Structure formats: C-alpha cells, structure tokens
Image 1 (tube, helix red, strand yellow):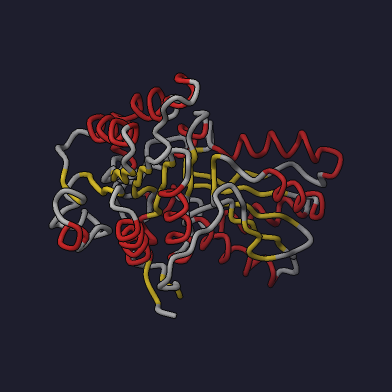
Image 2 (image 1 turned 120 degrees about the vertical axis):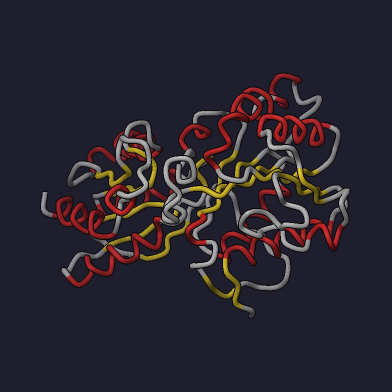
Length: 325
C-alpha cells in the first residue's frame, strides 16, 4: 500500500472522481496549471482539460454561486475556496442558496452534487486571515454536511464520499497536516461514512473528543495521561454536521467524563453544542463537568500562535482536572 501525505490523498481522490464521472468539475482560484496554492489539484487540468479543471476570478461569492448553478443543472462541482477564511464572502450563497435549494423547491431541484473544499485552521503562522476555523458557522445551517478529516486515509475516503453524497458538503482540510501527516492510503477507490465518528482508542476514565488536526494533539496529551495512570477513550468526530451523538453518548456513559477540544474560539464553538447534548443525555452518569479546551476568544494572532492554540499540555491539564474533580 503506498504512503501519501494528505495533499496527495486529496489529489488522488479528485483524480478518481473525475476519471469515474465526466460530470465532476474542479474549479477555484489558481487550481488549474498552478495546481492550487497548496498544489491539491496538481496535474488535474493537464489530465482532464481546461473544461473540467479551471481557474475562476477572485470572487468567492461568484465561485459558489456558479457552483450552485452547475449543481442545479446536474454537474458535480468541487469548488475550492483558497483558504477557509475567504469563505465568508460566499456565506450568503452557501447558507441561503446551497443549503436551502432542495427544501425551497419541495425536492423538485437540488444542488446535492456540490462539494466545497477549503484549507482551514492554524499552525502555519498564517495570521488572522489564514488560520481561522469556521466550522461552527456552518453547523448552524440545516441542509449542509460539514466534514473534517484527520489524516490522508480519512481525507481520501471522506472526500470521495462527499463528492458522491446526495447533499452539499463543506469539506474543511486541516492545512497544517497537508504535508506533515503521512500514512498508508489504498490506491483503489474507497469511501468512508459521513456522519459516523470513529473511536480511535478505547479507555475507561475519560472520553477525549476532537476532529481534524486536533486529533494529533489529543494523541500527545493522552500519551501523557496514560503515563499518569489515566485511561482515555479517544473519539474522532470526523463529521460536524451531522455529528454522531450516539457514539459519543455510548462512550460517556462508560467513562463518566468528557473533554472536547477544537481550534476555534470557545464562545459559540461547536464544543458547546456537543456539551449541551451530552449533559441532556448523560447527566446522571457524569462524574465531573464537561471540559472544553479551545482557541481563545480573540482574533487569531500571528506572533502568539502557539499560545493561542489548544496544545497537548492544555489538554493534559484539563484531563487531570476532570479526573480529579
């Protein structure tokens, strides 16, 4: 089985999808000959031609409006937003058009074939306009699916599922893992289920939950916790919308404790939604308050990026506090 980094896995998924279905189109800012700012679409224009992989003007609202039109007419567009921070000019198109197309027509028409790819998150010293994690904004929007992979294997399987899903999918790619995360990835076509969390490690004292790049951070924290005699169950949520309540509930009923971590700011972050749901369903089984280890309620800083990010030491301290409560 070949080893790929996350960028190679994403490129491989796009290649497979385009080879299988001529209706699959890739477009965005600089995705053509240049292959995208991170090279995720390298050689796709060379292989499939300018009609199927092409550059767009630098106008995000136009990219998604164009993608909505293509999807409504039966194409399978994969639109790239160069950085997730740039997705906000397209917010109206995504939440008012993409998410509501099927609903407003009574299923006479839809844009279910649309996938929106966007590199997101911190860790590359990108400053406030290239480091944000906006998943919670879209989790508030019925009609969308929101997916975040944690490694190359997940990225390929989840992206192929997103492209073939009957609903529009916002696919956030943790850019600090693009070249840093390397692993075995099957060359053949495969899909991973959207909406199902994965228990990556079983334990008995506390459930530690995250997604995307935070999963590597969690693993480091859990390693410290295990050395301190604390048994951690680790869950990768994978899908923010829909999110797998039942898997998390089953785990918390066993461990009695829950810690959630994400890069996005604490206030209004998706950890709050998870915490509210788990206390509703597991209240009498909780041994301590649900912990949140998140980014800070400030704009994403440049020089203080390491202080801002919820690292493994912050998570380890929260694990100890929860168990000792």
